[in-house]
Length: 153
Image (tube, rainbow, N blue to C red):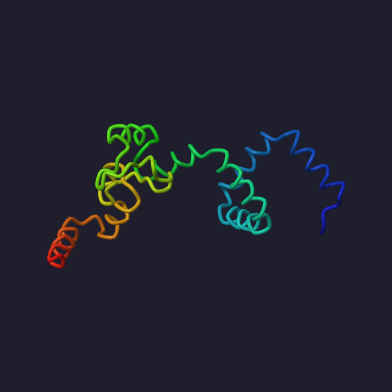
């Protein structure tokens, strides 16, 4: 049975007047019905993808430092640790010594060990990608070095 317009209006007004009470009840229901909650969220996203994308894009544009901090934390760094490492390295790549200030921010990387999660140094994009291509394996890097030296002659 379809809900009448008057009933919908009443529910909206009640929800606006009792927002915190409704939020508590909503959270309780979501915890008790995780599968239904997942479906509701998925359906909402499908129906409102443009609105969600616009909101997220605006937030990202207004909060670049927070985005940088979130991305660094995934690698075990904080923004403060990253900035200190840059100063200690005199804004130079730890491998090729290029001036990192001359690069776009997206090409300056916080390097970390993929096995232990330990922080290492700040690298340029090319050096970071090179290490990744050799899967952070010294044996592969040494084999590549030997190959280059052999082919140089």
